[in-house]
Image 1 (cartoon, rainbow, N blue to C red):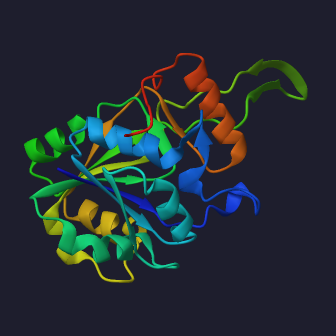
Image 2 (cartoon, rainbow, N blue to C red; image 1 turned 30 degrees about the horizontal axis):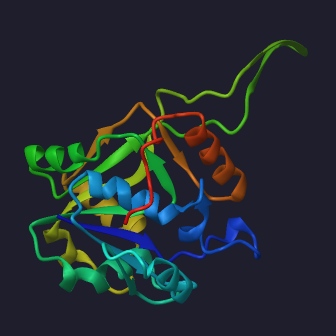
Length: 230
């Protein structure tokens, strides 16, 4: 099965002196290689990386990896437009897709399994958003205590990993935004399902979050087996 990683965004929250987001090192391994490893575990025998902003740097850095292929999809192309440009490369009945900004210990094989079993055109990984702040417990003006940061089990967000039928490609145009255009349409048609995951998931939008991911791996957490593809 083909795996596609959308890695053309600007990563503006990283700061002007940071490398392109796909190349931010997580324990010495570029973030995009960690994402590719997850797709490979889920059956992605070939990985295409859709590049854009600073794409030449990404392509040069990943040129040594024979199982990773970068494709320039335009500097300012929306994510659905990037996928539209890769449509001719999708030969099978379905494919895996990932943003290049999150890691998880979810069994991504289950995305395609659930998509097929439900007959839906798409299945996304649903995760709990991490809390940014702890909470104050107030009784009037008195601080009665503190609650540590924790995820709200009633809230779910798009975790950035998907299994898609190749049929969705016919819905795309050069200006399609996946989250604003495609996914809401699929949801209205009953063609979008979600695989709920209660385990580890973390995004990487800034260097502070990159260091937090490194600490999770260094502590022997659920991603300790992720390594740089050969």
